Image (cartoon, rainbow over all chains, first blue to last red; front, side):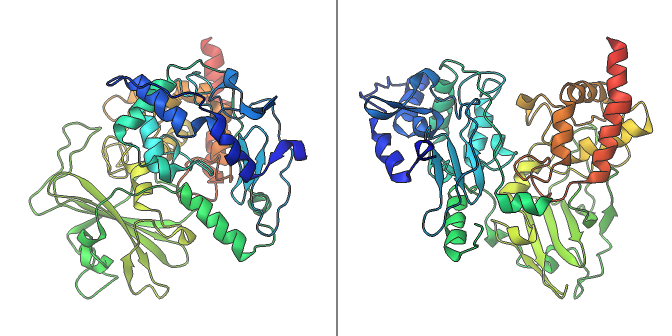
Length: 187
Length: 280
């Protein structure tokens, strides 16, 4: 089980290795602007699966921003007590906590499993409201909606424009799981 | 969370707060502090409805865990609703609508109001335990009592052609181009509970068209049949689910409407799918 879990500290420490070089952002080019924001705002930290490379954990850029891998079935999360509250998959794409289990979304433009059918408005509504497309279920932790809500509309439109240009990856991310207590209460 | 420690609850609250939705609505200062001040009741009463407020009931009501509801409409003196577009009734400035939710007592009364600049604002008033006073709920709502945030009001009411969902041509008796009473009941439920989001304007990306049109009823019914037939299993799973991450509608429901879900299931299995097979 230890191989599947990293501590939050380890994940946050690893997050620093994503961007090896400064990224140019030509003035007036929303796609370049979006790439800059995505690459500097931690999107890859959770939406790109991590693998254990020769230098330690690193994002698998062949599956960039494709979310939790569909073929990675997660066992039940360990029961935590005391100040330990959250379990994180080694890919950094699945998170178990008091809310249940959340899996990071596929942000690539795949039409069936990603954002291929989304619009810029739907993307903005998601960040602005904390609900999918502004109307569906809540976006779950650890997605920092409160932080990203500080982006301007132009920033969010640039992010969406960039995400529509990256390679599409067909990867149907699992639906989130409720916490065990909620599952028991529903029976 | 199994040990229910206060630390866990606090940490969970913090994490959920990080994902919480921001609110962009009118300030509380512009809203009346109590329901009595909104003009619903006669002066000095929280029971007697003012004669200028017209009671109404939509034919396809929104399911809210089986709660009882009462609704009223107020139009300013001499003002009328422009109904020239049957799918986009234009309500006059100053329109107010209230909806009262009750279970074993009054829980909340929601208010929608059209302001002088043409915009709409939304508020909820929470009743006290004695049922003697309803006061303005905070913008973030009162989740433990099931009272939604004002942002959640917008999530449903901003998706339709007009923010007033229950007072429309379809909801006040308009025709649905259904082929059977069973289909009418199923389509009506989907219109009243899902159509305000699942329409071509609000959520085209989902490919579900569940709103009925008073102007083009045959066309809207055909679009509903086609999209439901395409995703019947997923629709059934969501309307039958108590899982808050899966269920539909996602807001205001914690107990599925099992009776309506059974109607939809029967319609799909006995009516919709056989028609589809026959047309192939």
